[in-house]
Length: 530
Image 1: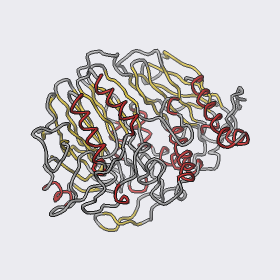
Image 2 (image 1 turned 90 degrees about the vertical axis):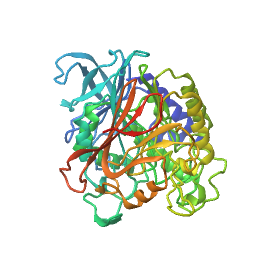
Image 3 (image 1 turned 30 degrees about the vertical axis):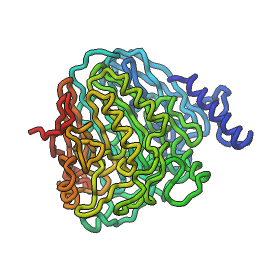
Image 4 (image 1 turned 45 degrees about the vertical axis):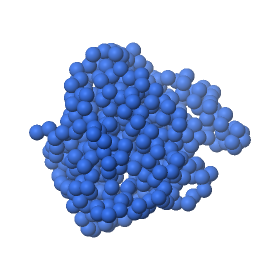
C-alpha cells in the first residue's frame, strides 16, 4: 500500500480541518500522524463479511481492498477504536500455493477499518489472485488482472459494465452471472447504493410492486448511515462474487449521495453549507468501500474521480465525473415541455475536467477512445408528437457543454465510444450535435447499460420507449430488462452484448442475450449483429 501517500492525504485533511473548524476538529476526526497503536484483536465474528475487491488495474498492478466489519450493521461495526494490522498476499493461481508478493497494511478506524493496498511490480496482461489475513482469519480469494504493457499490441479486450443496483427493488442475480463471465475488468457507472428508504409497495411502470428486500435504517445523512448502507449492499453474496472475479473501475452517479445532486446542490432546498457536510460523509464512505487509490481520498466535500486507464494500443478508458462540477439542471430539474433554458451557458464536466479530456483525446494513440460515464448523451425527444421534452438530468439538458464535448470527439477521436448508465434501460444509438436534425454521419456511438435491479423486473420493451424510438432515428435499439453489458473489443470491431435476466424480484433469474450491437473501426454507425 502507498502508506506515505495515504498519510500525506490524511495530513492534508487535518490541515483543512484546522483552517475550517479549528484545533478541536482534529481530535474529533482522529486525523493525527503519530504512529498508530495497533490493536491485538479477537474479532467477535468473522471480520471479512463485506468480501474483497480489486480495481484500478495498471500494467504493473492494481488496488486490492477489504474492510474489517465483524458486525457490519451495528454501531461501530464490531471493531475497536484502534488501528489493526492486516496481512495481504498475491498468488499466481486461485489455490494461492505460489505467493509472489505479500505485506502488511493498517486498517485505520478513521477510514472505517478499510484497507486499500496499491500493489505494483507485477507482470502486465495476466491474472493474479489475492487474499487478506487478520486476527487468524482469512478472507475469500479474489481474482484480478493487470492491464497490458503500455503501448503494446492488444488484439482483444473483454470487459463488463454494471450499475444502478437498488437493493430494495431486486436480488443481485445479474452480478452472479457477471462473476461467471471471464473479464479483464468491470466498469461500474454508478448508483452503487441508494440513499433513501422506499415504501414496501411502490408504483412501477407496470403497477404496484412489493419490494423483495428493505433497506436497513432510514435515509442516509451521516458517515455511520452511509457505512451501514454500504455494508448492507456488500453483504450480498452475488455482489461479492462479481467483485472477486475481476478488477473494477468505479465512478459514481447521484444516489451515492442524494438524488440528482450536482456541485453543492441537493435539489431539496438544503443550504449548500449543510449539504456539503452530507457530501463529505458520503464521499468518505464511498472511498472506504471502493477499491480506489489514495489519490482519490476525499478532501472535505471534494473527491478526485476523473482519471484515465490505458489498455495497450487498443483502448483508452476516460472515466468521467458528471456530478461534482456540473451546473444546476434546467427548468428546475423537471421534465418540462419545450424548456427554454436548455441553451444556457452551463457546465457538465467543468473547465478543468473538460480540458483534461480534450488533451487525452488529442494525445491518444489507441484504436478506441472511450468515455466511461453516467448520463445519456443521446438527446432523445421524449414527447412523441408536437413539442419536445428532454431528460434535464442527462447531457440533453445541457446543450452548450454537450456540443463542446461532441466537437472535441469529432476533432480528436479516431473511434469514439460513449458508455453510459442511469436510464434503467438498455439503449444503443448514434450521437449527433442535434439528434433531431442529424448530420450525414454520426460523431460517436453510445451504449447505455440497464440497471442491475432498479425499477424491478422490467420488460422486453416499454411501450413509451417504443413511441420515443419511432421519432428518434438516432436510437437504434432499446430494451427494458435488468442485467449488464459485455464489450468485446478488437482493433477491427467493437461488439456490445446486452445480457439480461428474466426476473430480479425473485431469486434464480435466468440469463440470456437480448441483442448484440456492433461498430466497425473507422465508422460510428451502430449495427445489429446477428
